[in-house]
Amino acid sequence: MNGDAEGRRIAVRGGTVVNAEGRVRADVLIHGETIVGIGIDQGWEADEVIDATGTYVLPGGIDVHTHLEYPIDGFTTRTADDFATGSIAAVFGGTTSFIDFVKKHPERTLHETFVERRGVAEEKSIVDFGLHAIVPPLAQQPDAHEDLRRLHAEQGVSSWKFFMAYPGTQMVEDDELLAGMDLAHELGALPMVHAENGHMINRAVKQLLDDGNTAETFHAEAHGHAQEAEAVHRAIVLAQEVGTPLYVVHVSSRHAAQEIAEARAEGVPVWGETCPQYLLASREDYEGLGDAAAGYICSPPIRERANQESLWTYLGADGLSTLATDHAAFCMHQPEDLPPQKMRSPGYFPKVPNGVPGLEDRMMVAWEAGVVAGRIDPCRFVEVTSARPAKLFGLYPRKGSVSVGADADIVLWDPEADHTITAEGSHSRTDYNLYEGMRVSGLPVTVLSRGRILLRDRKLQDAARETRGRYLERGPAQLY
Ligand SMILES: NC(=O)NCCC(=O)O
Ligand SMILES: [Zn+2]
Ligand SMILES: [Zn+2]
Image (tube, rainbow, N blue to C red; front, side, top):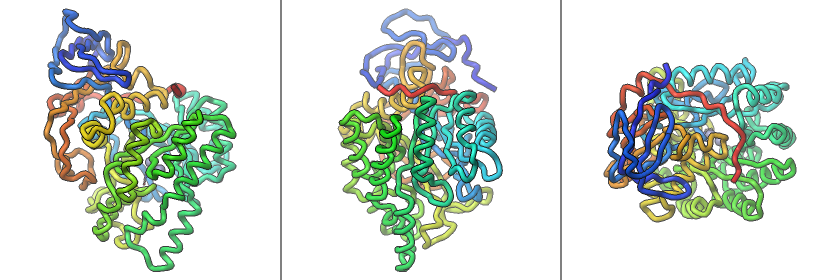
């Protein structure tokens, strides 16, 4: 069933509207699914008035990097959150759109896998969503580029991702990276890269294992700064050779960020994404945890604390441009109804499923460590969590802005709340939280998705149970 907001007029009164460009005290009028007015003392008649006094009225967050019910290791296991639990967690965190990934099923084509996954997400997600394609090594599907063309034309898939890591399963060599970038350039799609040098990582893993260094914390040693910075540099050079813009996902290393920032300073159209786990968590947090360090294993890894401040500086100055989560949640304690999770190989890091949760936490922790701590202002916060992602992935200004004509995806953000993040009090299926015990003062209290009130005063509403989000066909990237 889809939205029932049709025809209803909602006035959001007394708040401060924050967009990437600026903030202003203003009321917002919604008609059905759309914002139809922004102004003060307009005398609007409405079916419902939402009192936004004391809150910031933000465009709904957009997380362009999630992995919900995401298959790994040849589809033998998957992440814990499905599109239902993941999208509920998103709403509690102020995120009203996400873009997930389609990885080709071993026995189906990329196109077939895409159509099936889209259907699953349409059944379950309570918020709007898009899907990026993952470009498989062509040995897995020689005509995969034909599928990309079809997905672009028929499904509005305007971005695809290459893995420069995970040799033997997902990694593509430079020739295929170039060919896939050529196709993106021809069609006006945005190529994305998971930039780590897979060969360097494999070599480092082998050396570590040969030396008996199998414990969870050695994962980070195998995924060094150089591995990431080299791949980022190479991807930028290849993209320039092709003449295409480039998006680098989950930048974790200050050296990798520096490659992007320097290229951007020279006018190269490359954008870097970072994630809360790289800004707020650190190697020091998990080094003493023994096998439980598995909960922190992701690629690229969560690095030493000294790395964090540089990432913040780049994020503030647009050397890095977006904040997504790479939400790939697994459980620490094995639930009966899920395939093997984080603790499937205690003491042996190469077999720990990669990925950490964060979809619900992203905006709260970024507000606290970013805005409250004085590193970014509320407009920059909106820019990196919503507006810039919407622009790069072909959704702007329908998403990513509180403006007339935009979808009424609106978050009432209380900057004076007092909330403590816990796994227990969160909505992801995972059973731990990287930010356990962190107190945050910025909290999404009321959340609307295309005019449907999904969360009101922190309570999930009937609309979240009775209606579903929509698949987002996307246009070309808006680069500036
Ligand atoms: N990041 C991670 O460790 N897992 C999710 C898949 C990916 O983004 O590489
Ligand atoms: Zn990745
Ligand atoms: Zn990812």
